[in-house]
Image (cartoon, rainbow over all chains, first blue to last red; front, side, top):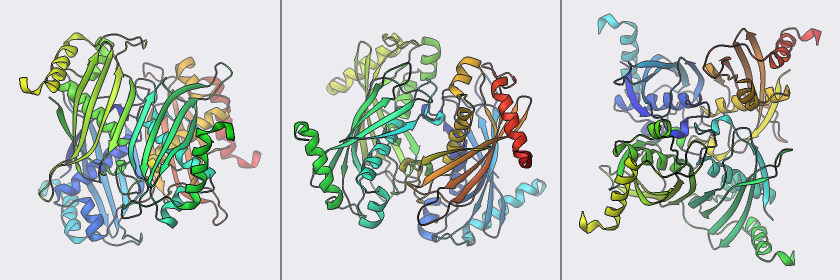
Length: 147
Length: 147
Length: 147
Length: 147
């Protein structure tokens, strides 16, 4: 039930080690997260503007397996993995896309934890029309046999 | 009358060519611009929050002379060069600071042009208490003999 | 003869004014430039690695017409506009893509000037197999009637 | 034995939520890490160039306590917390510096784990002249009474 988004590594994202700078994976996590929401027919801009719900990050973790390089085609897999009250957790896998020369390769894995807030940064539940499909996605993730 | 601010090149700012990525000079321009305002006893946050005046950029130019490298100590010289109605223009020079081994070196020069706006993005004059010292700085720049 | 590349505005690219931070347009210029080269069957990574030709920027200009906002779909039009010896100049137009509610809108225009260099940063001509189609593109740009 | 480095929040580092974008804390971690090494009389550039030792990140974690805002003065505390073979772990605390109006406030905490490598990305031990003072710093951290 994860949504996959594809981006190409920009020159701006590399560093002098010749690989993607480590903080940029968190930017890719965000891109994947937003596209996941869009896949639910729900855009984050709308959630901020219409519902007044924002998703500040309270924790982010990333484990780096292999370096992404300039011009690589990157696949970002994102999926919610926990929704309990105002706490929402996403999981991510970052891959280098398969090429003629090489198979798809896992580059990084990670999680971000968010607290759903209103504009005044008070906790609030996720708008139900996005919460409901997420709960189903999380359930399906844990019980793959039922899908 | 230019104000000089010092920053150190971050690993994040380099690219795989082993030099600072070209867009980051515009970030340094912004750092120099803000410190110039602070030197007038005026912070930009306050200008946004209290006076409701913002300075969106309408044009930016940069000429690159020599590459900045990781860990270089960078001197940002910033100064207003034009203030006419709502139009404010800043000039910048970016240097690698002198070291024991080498003299201070010019790395880049540029300008940014801003239109002073209120929160609704309507043109408005610069708050007088920041406009007045800027006009003097610009005058002094053009008539160095009088200073 | 310009090549158009589409990107979506990332949350990371916005600033607290609620619009895309001005330096990020130079990142988009780079994305457009690279995709232009790819459209010629030529990737920049290959040019760096195989031909040993790099394209450091010596000048960048951007004129901002209207702000890009979070989640906007951005169209980057890039095209070479000058190739003389080792000097290569690109022109760019940045648009917000048309939506159901609004027509395509010009957000920014700019140019970057590059000097083609070898790995030791000595001037060298552009590899002929990329120079030749560029010269034709530049010619077509100046003589649209002939196309 | 932590080293504290001070940076000021740049406009470029904020996002449209009006706070510092979450990936930028990892940039600050890097700044603190580098300044820690410099405090040992050891600069990272030199380590890369002279010793051929690089410190790719294999894991990064950050827990966000309170948002950093534009123009805040940020104190980055960095310290090695583990050195075992080629594995080196740093810990960080990010604070908003005390002002006349408010006490110093913890904004984020985190860790990065590195594997010391040579240029070919083979594991190697940390150069002894930087390893030795780090081991002492880690020992002092665990046995504060002895200091």
